[in-house]
Image 1 (cartoon, rainbow, N blue to C red):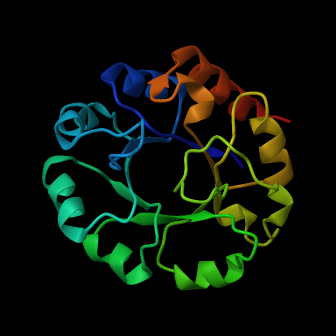
Image 2 (cartoon, helix red, strand yellow):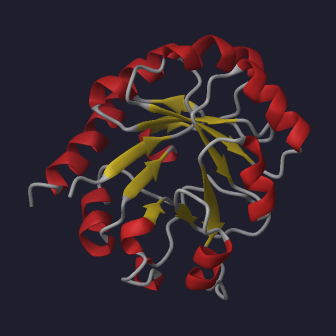
Length: 208
């Protein structure tokens, strides 16, 4: 089975073109102002319509208010929402769009319990835990902590790049992988050659 790919933190039309050309399944846009990868509503309204057919436009939010999310949705044609904070399932369900829930891999997390709690989500995205940081740390966690019976539903994130994504896919067998910092020259600046290399490694993993 082919592993799907989301490339997150896009801020330029050229990045969208590079992601689509490389064959990614989803383009992620960060609506979290403290992030170095954040994009404004105005910027997003200009470039998200450039996302081509059959590539999902994902909006990432961290403990945003319903009013703030609605303000984005009024101007930006997103097709999937990603909640990266402490949002309840009830909160996530109110926007009439498919959504995924990101979970940071705390030591005491129970993924089966979280899967049941967010049963309406299209998937669970697993990222490394770092106190005070909601994600995008570039750190990885111990993939052995993912229960084998949940792996096929998981979007794996955290410290992935072209050097380790094949190993991650081989060990975890996730539904999808999510990358941001691993395809950048520095935070917020995407490297199109790294995007191409990352996608080539994912595609090669399906042939191993």
